[in-house]
Length: 424
Image (tube, rainbow, N blue to C red; front, side, top):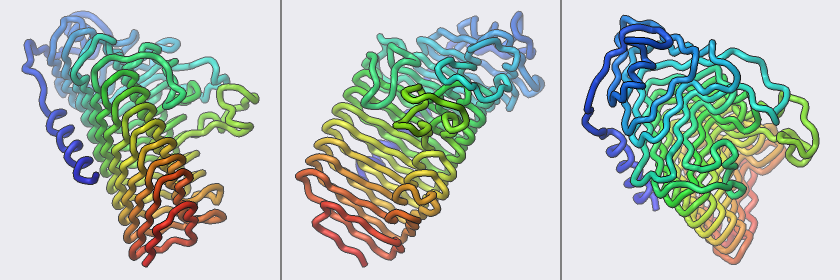
C-alpha cells in the first residue's frame, strides 16, 4: 500500500509540472483596474500566458477578474492584487472552462471585515474560484506557486466539480453532479490566511469532486492559518479516490468561525448544541473510492476541532502515512481516521508527536466501524492524551485488527476489537 501511495504521488508531481505550449503571450503594462495594458484586458484577450513585470508593484481591482479560456498561466513578480474595493460577495478571480491553470508569485488581498454575525447570510467572496464544467474530461489542473490569499469571507481557494457550487455539501452529506474529469491541485509555498469568517463552512482551500474522477492533491512548504472553517477540505462524493501528499506545511488556528458568533439550535453552526467548529486538514470520501494520504514534516496546531480528520464512507479504504508530524493543542483529537463501511484502515505513524489536545478526546483515534480490517504500525512516536487515552484503535465489525508499536511513549492505549497487539 505504501508503494502504491508513493508511486501515485510521484506521478502527480510529474504531470503537474507539464503544461501546454503557449499560443500567445501578453505582458501587463500597468496596475489599472481595466483598460489597455491592464491585467483584466490581458485576461479578456484570450492569452494563454500573462507576464506581470516587476515594475508594477500592485494591481487595483474594482470588479471581479474573470477568465473563460482553455488554458492560462499567470507569472507575477510578487505583486499585490488589491481587491479591497470589491463590493458585496464578489470573488477576486473566477475561472470557468479552463482545464490547465497556473498562477505564480502573486498576493490576492480582499476586503477587510469583521466576523459575520449571521452565518446563514454569506458576507465576502472567494479568493480564487475554479468552476469545472460538467462536460470536462481528463484532468483539470490548478497549480499555485508562491501565492498568498487573504482577507476574503468565503473560501480562499475553491475548485468545484459540482453542479451545486456552494450548495454541494461535504462528504457523505454532499449532493450534486460532476464531470468525468479528475481534479489535480498542486500548492507550493502558498499562504492562505485570514479567510472564511464571512459564512459557516468557508475553508482555506476547498476541493469538491462529485463525478467519476479522482482528487490528486499535493502541498509543499505552505501555511494555512486563521481560517474560519477547515484549513484544507477535500470532498470526494462519487466513484473516485483522493490521493493527497502534504509536506513541510503548517495548519494552525483554523475552524473558529462558529465559536465566535451567537448561534441558534438547529442553525447552520449548531452541532448537537455545540458550535460546529472545524479542522486543520479534513478529508471526506463517500462512494466506491479510497483515501491515500501522506503527511510529512508538518505541524498541525491549535485548530478548533481535529487537527487531521480523515473519513471514508463506502467500500473504499483509508491508507495513511504520517512521518515527522507534530500536532499540539487542537481542541479534539490531534489525529482521527474513521473508515465507516467495508473498507480497510491501514496506518503507519513514524516520529509523530501529539499532545495537549485539551483533554476532550483521544490524542489519536483510528477506527473501522464495519467489516474491514485495521492494521496500524507506530514507531518512534509520543502521544499524550490528557483526560482521555493517548491512542484509541477500534475494530467495531467483523474484520480483523492488528496494532504494532515500537520505541514509542503512549500514555494509555484503548484497543477495542483489536485481536493482535504487539507493543514493545
